[in-house]
Length: 382
Image (cartoon, rainbow, N blue to C red; front, top):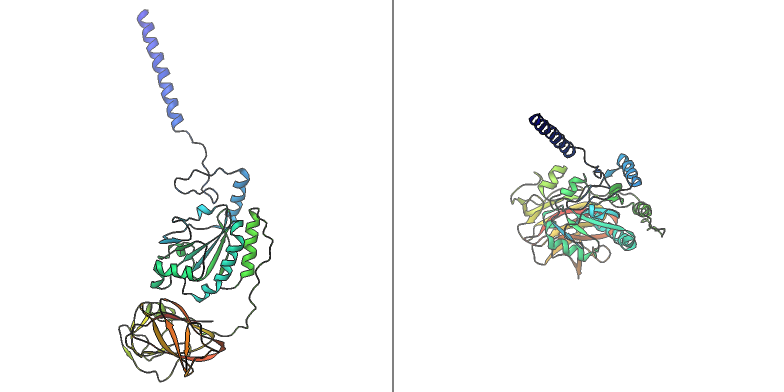
């Protein structure tokens, strides 16, 4: 009897132990408390504690997710200016972010800078953050020192990041310089604008998004430039064969653009809205380089302003400039041209955009007489 009691106690103890073990398994495999959703308001950087959202926040974000796209994160950034390295879109949540895709040799980008600088001055204290995403078009624009010089020259005080490999550009599915995206306090893209113009509309949207976060920004909106009569402009013309040929462009010489360093014959006939060459020029994927002194460029065009993206290879160059066969004068010379008696010269010292002609709208023919080593990437017009 005593032995049977002992056996019974052992069995009971075993049953109790098994129940306890199974309970522990159930607890370890049970559903954990819900985490913050991986939505716009809850995406976290690595190592940052989850943001605790109220029910109202969750509802607001859920509604936005049905209407808007979450702004992609900055990607592949090679350098940061006017901000700490490691700047992210996520770190700016709660603020209004204007993402501006630009490159420093783009005349359209340069013309938008006064508006960006004014918005930065007016609204930075209210929670507007402008992030200039510098996505280079030409190889020399990838150089950090060149970009820093441009930031200093144009007086840019807001953050700029280098998107040298176009990773952020692709993340935003962008195709244009300049292009602006406005991102609200929850990280959603609420507005975007391609190219110049639309300044009043853009500022009104800035003010609307700032008001959503409780800011009082009822001041005067910047005015639009006076509307210009639409006139046919010569399109941007590229020099490098990897830029020009895929765009359906070519030079006006018979036989077109040649790789290597051919000696182009003096053109007998000029082709409208295309430049022609004479003398020896070396072709590269994104530029043409004068292989001898006296090599020439001829360009019939229609515009008020003519600009060239060019470089001198680290030395000062003076290129003779003629417009319709005559030297430029004070009435039509661009800001980078010097008048010396009866001669006009384009002064080239570094890789950037230069203004050659600034006159009333008309059709003209430009002639540039180069020095050996002179490099140009494109012509743009305004």
